[in-house]
Length: 177
Ligand code: ATP
Ligand code: MG
Image (cartoon, rainbow, N blue to C red):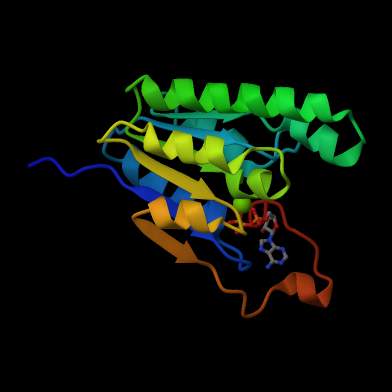
């Protein structure tokens, strides 16, 4: 019997949530699996995986929908803008999830988007519930909601024991972004 896809959550304060998802992606690309990573928050930043994804094409596809969110977090845009961008983001996720084209979909930093009130938890729950049986769905970001943890098959909490940031060491290219 073919194994069903899982819902996987990487949460917690410690470093390693996005990199855990990327590690899984790297492994899966090795078997020619099709993967889509949807970035919720990082839209206007530059980060390494944005460039590595190009090297892992066509198996790995990366979509940034966080651009609007980043702007919104920084400047005080009207509430209707939040709602509109969140709605568009969820629509893109739903389309990607339901196309059946992917083996794995990563919703990177979606837990933050929920925690910030940008994405409704009900919409995220709906995404999880609507996933095809064989799809592996990964959600990252700290502050994973109880409702999402309940629905997940695999939940790992990254625990911070030490982080160089505590000593004032800044984020490093290729290690942190
Ligand atoms: P990474 O992308 O390195 O796996 P992450 O996904 O667990 O980290 P996020 O919460 O998405 O962490 O944080 C985004 C940025 O903050 C990354 O540059 C990450 O390296 C850094 N970071 C992660 N955890 C911590 C921490 N405990 N203290 C300070 N900075 C952190
Ligand atoms: Mg992350």
